[in-house]
Image (cartoon, rainbow, N blue to C red):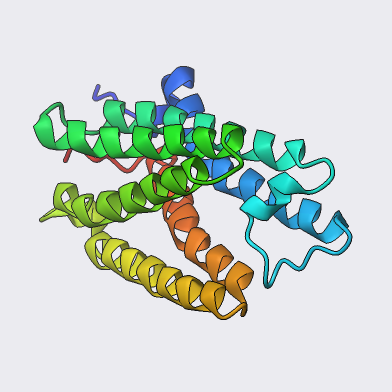
Amino acid sequence: MQTTIPNTPIYKKQGQDALFLMCGLVGGIIFFLTYTVFGLATSHYNMFKETISSLELVRYGWIQQVNFIFFGILNIGFAVALAKALKSNWYSTVLVFLQVSCGIALIGDGFFIHEPMHMVCDLITFNSSLLLLFLFTRPFYKNPDWKGWIVYSIFTAIAMMAFLTAFGLANKSHGLAGLFERLAVLPRSIWTIVLAGKLLTGKNLLN
């Protein structure tokens, strides 16, 4: 009698692995909801013109500081999930390093609320994210389970660069800098949520 092995998601077998993947799934959502609700609740704060980091300088600014730090920790947790999901080679090490760099820089944003260190952390966060998006296309080459992911990753990186450029221009002209910064953050967060979700449902990066 032949025994049928159920199609169990690979990360459902080990709770710890699923926990690290959940870091990527919920991190961006918690970060977005926190700075959005806090921004709406803060008087004289214009989220369309003022940056997310400006919330660190208002009354109860510690809320946004904790938001940055917690988001950074979750990003590092997701890096552990990537290390487990990817093949063990130098290329994967670079990808994991970039993800960890994002997390550390976000934690830095929470601790260093003034320039120039805050700007340094911002630059590390965005540049690491862009490099990760472009380099992450390689593991999916000729992988039928991830059809279209290369295009999606590149599109996400291009969207980030476009909104960051718009943010820089708006910041100089006192325009809608806050709006464009938020639009620059969202594509990467959504990309991470989608990636974590696919891995949680059983998609395998090792094929």
